[in-house]
Image (cartoon, rainbow, N blue to C red):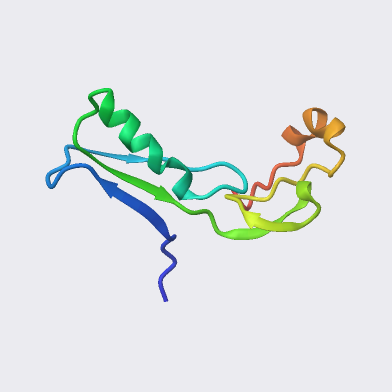
Length: 96
């Protein structure tokens, strides 16, 4: 069994000279970055291989335990008014 993450890969040339890896935000997935490739190409970006991994799904504490794509749990309480005061003190160190 492989622990490799599922991902979207886009290669703009048969011989890319660079690899770009972008990680999406909470609740999103790698497909959200696919339109960025065309935009970068239109601005003259070199031939590249783009890798957009999908985070695993897990319950996210700050969202009431809702299962969604996340790189780590956000442990601050669901009361968003308290987020700025507490998020730095309640990180998921093991998950990160």
